[in-house]
Length: 100
Image (cartoon, rainbow, N blue to C red):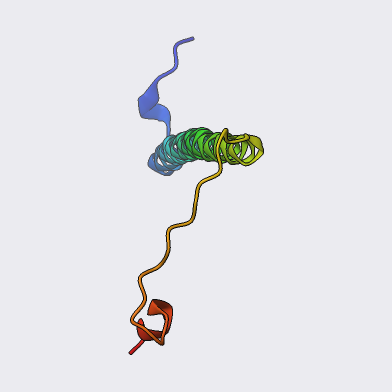
């Protein structure tokens, strides 16, 4: 017994066609949503990697600078530097005249 499509009513064909079209739309929306989630996840991962590497670089620079400053503060100089006398205007030191 062969299936003859002409024996199916028009309303049944429209109903089945509507279901098929709805399934195609559902598949499209689910695929688009899944791809959007993947793109958001990849973007968030990329942002996390970039921000973490920049933060690590900043912390490394800060730690290196801190070590350099502490090392320079503990280093002993072989000679003491003599302070240079500040030029004076007579009765008032130069620092006092800076604001006027």
